[in-house]
Length: 105
Image (cartoon, rainbow, N blue to C red; front, top):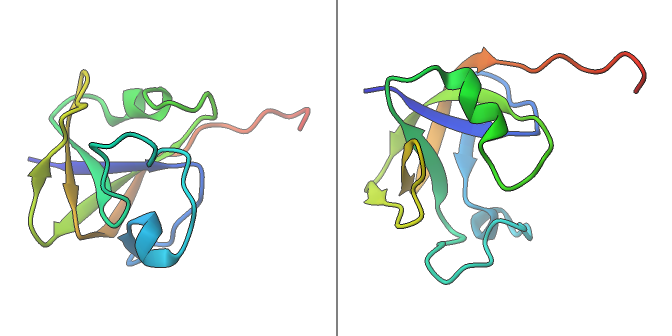
């Protein structure tokens, strides 16, 4: 089963993703008590990964990466259309969708 991660930030293939608390970053997504800021949240499924670009809290389009989870997988209690899980870190293995940028930006 493939695993995916969405981000507005471009990551190189081979980058190890970690939770915002691990990086010392503040994240607007880690505000609910069920979220663990030291973990990475990833999506699991066989659907079209392009749909994940628009499926987050932010209205900003996201780049979708295929990732390899590392460490214990925990189910995300806030899962939506796609099943989501958290892991200790995730290795970027491929960029599967990059939204087009608007020409007027």
